[in-house]
Image (tube, rainbow, N blue to C red; front, side, top):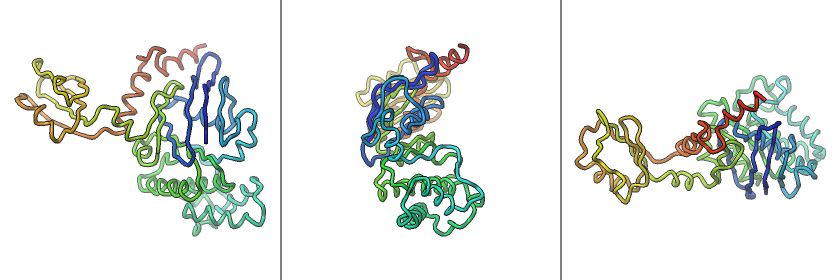
Length: 321
């Protein structure tokens, strides 16, 4: 449904996107994760034809974003971070105006408005002014608005930003329902790792304008190295203890008086790991999460340890120039 090939976006000498290439399959939810300023919103703006790339290109629903921009716009729906519904109008009035702008025929207009209102659960509040809506209701109205013209691709930029946990879970339900009933392909940006884990079929981690990892949430978590055990000692880590000698241990990291061990099958192997171990203060265990993946993948790039330097360093250099 979407093909991105060697996409570059430059601002003077600063590269917001640096040779991105990936594909998004039909009817999947594709997540874009990364630190602030990584290039996620720039990418969506290019795919939505709001920005032109410096180099490379992209195809959306079979149409080139540079040469068939009108066809691309007819194929997509967009919900950006900032609310954009008219507060004074009712939910229904907001949808009717956009139905007119989208050129939906009169015979289909009312039916389609009713369909999208039902999809997002706002039938009973359609005649209320939007200023009386909660934050979650506004986001759902904007999703309904973006679906009016039956788009093939839907961009959701931080769809649950600022919502309380209950409203966030409600939004997840409607996003899943949207994919199931409207048969759309979604590109989703978010900083909520549990949201990406819950919704996304695949995730692309973007940092410094590059995709540095791309796979399903489960496989990305597996690549961290299995179960995670943190052993904290009262004083310091014993120098004579070599945790790497066990074949079920993938990786060992040391931080102050703690050792973090990535291992297989903690339930059956932990006893071997801590046998004859003295001075232990606490032992913590958890399954890898997308948050672990995010911190691991983005940490070096943010700090400047990557060969090309971290994002903050490169951005500072760009501002000086």
